[in-house]
Length: 184
Image 1 (tube, rainbow, N blue to C red):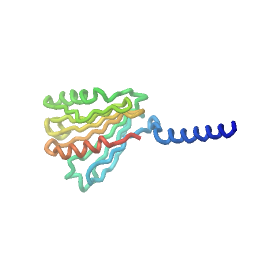
Image 2 (cartoon, rainbow, N blue to C red):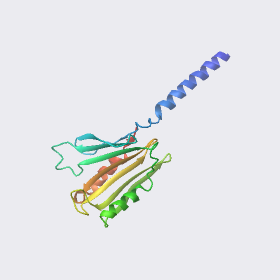
Image 3 (cartoon, one colour):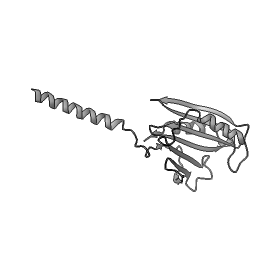
Image 4 (tube, one colour):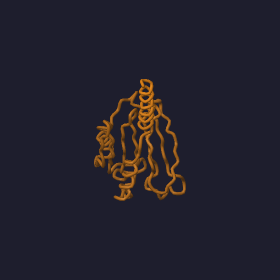
């Protein structure tokens, strides 16, 4: 009788352990990444951005040649900052970016599109309007940025869109794609 209870308890423990470990495993520090499903029909090519430190990783996604001329978004930059080395938070990031852009373009505007906190981790989607691209003037570009706290890292996804191409439909399309991204 005692042996039967022991085996049933052991069996229940093994089943519960497998269930807990398989569903909510934390990403390994230094390996965590954000996965985005890019909207539209464009194909994207990824290029690793070299950084001076192992605590920061960057990838630039560019539209593959052929469709790059017509694409409103030509490059998406993803930066992952390991919070073991740089304990950063998402809060305050939109305001800091806006102040930085206002230094070069005083007419820059800030629009918080979405702010969510789940399990103590914050994600913010925001747009800084009336900025400039490297080849443009003030007011020529909108920076759409998504910053999300993961279990071990802070992720930033940034894309520049020409002001005249930043339509409500394009904004909604990228909003949906960025908010549906997941951290692995």
